[in-house]
Length: 507
Image: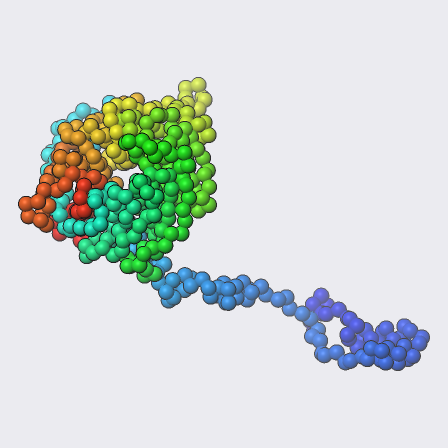
């Protein structure tokens, strides 16, 4: 028999309890007759001698795999959503691996950091390896020779103002000088869809960015009136480029105090950080704002403390497949201005743009935490900043900037001046630096594109269209490198868009 502690206690429904109750009452017979007349007694069903606790596991699994869990098809690898989730994960990993291998293969082209005093003075010079390194660098530079692989005629656009490669799919966004946007298949050279951004009259598009590119890709655009628009539907459910016009899913004013009546206007300049969903917005305004795109709320603002227009933005960090994020951090914002100045801001601060930033250095001689001052104002450029970008080649964390006058400068934010300068020797209207290969491209209104390495050597000068015999390229209006692969897109002051890649490269 079961132990006493597992036996069910007696209740009114059992015969033993009923007999005990009747035995205690002297009028038990009359009571039973009256009770039966009002509330007839029914014989209870047989009751087990002991009970078992009910398990909650079935309830948990029913929620996960039952009626409610059936809606989440991404958990099922055999469903359409589950298959797409697996495809995107595999696609992203493969592309990131290619990107890392590309960066490692061209690491020999990176500018070497200065030799420390503690190192031997013969570390580089008196070594047979130095000649081998130079020879390998020459071979790598030859491998980066670009050729024209595709030519698009973006009919309906007078010129091209913005170009953006999708990091994982062969999609190229081409924005015209007003409000027309088109998406091209870079593999087939086919325009898949064209639509209007919806700008008001006398305004133009000044920014275009991919959002959520690793999953459900969205296109974010900014116009000179300070408005941000987000479009969905550029890809089908299987991540093929859609032929249908995308839908506008969100729109808000990111810079309500933007000035639009200036003759030379940069419009709205944007920088998006996928990790955290933060959008940094500036332009013809004296305030830089940090927006939470998901909630469309402004999280922080700081004054730019400059009367010139903000023309370029970047953050001092990047993502590496093996090492994760590296750099100074996503909160360090680098801004370029129309007067040639560069300013560094910390997005975490609420000091209205205090130009002094500090970096912890550890314990000093006195035992207190020492801090090195980081300079946050640089005024070596003399004209409009065309572009700023962040690089980590050669173990350095550097900012690359270029101005219309033609000077390209590399900055280490720990020092008060640039670490080296490259002279473009011509007026420059476009600048793009590759994120994985130590090379950059410059464009000139004199109708040529120059490909250069970080050591200042000119690798290639492009003056003619290879697909159209004898035709000179137009004045260069914009340049854009693929985030992972050595592909370059160039836009001109006409309807032609050109795509360049190394020989035998597959787009």
